[in-house]
Length: 138
Image 1 (cartoon, rainbow, N blue to C red):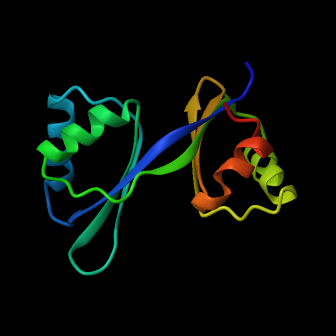
Image 2 (cartoon, rainbow, N blue to C red):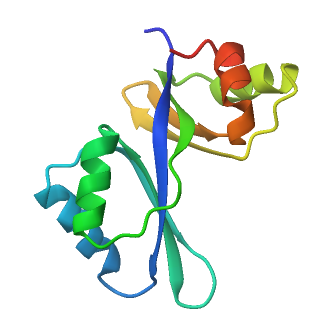
């Protein structure tokens, strides 16, 4: 199967780093019918954590986040990748960006099983247009 790369909306939220906070937030999003393409969280600072969201539907996510009392950062654009899990797949993607002289802000990749992988690539927002062309994103 061919690799697909598309632009997606990316949102961040700072939350308390305490037991059950992730379950509360995700429960509220689930109750609102929000579908997430990707999610990850990490601790930062004393008593704080950051949740990073790639929603399937940005407008539905923003409305549900408001209902869950999440204070979202500014909407950003990232790239969502799906493809065959082969050795060097991520190196090839990052190589395309390097060849275009684009510095990656962050990348998250994961094997999806059955020979597939997924990734999200974050870039400085000023580089999104150039990166989209370099990656052949839709």
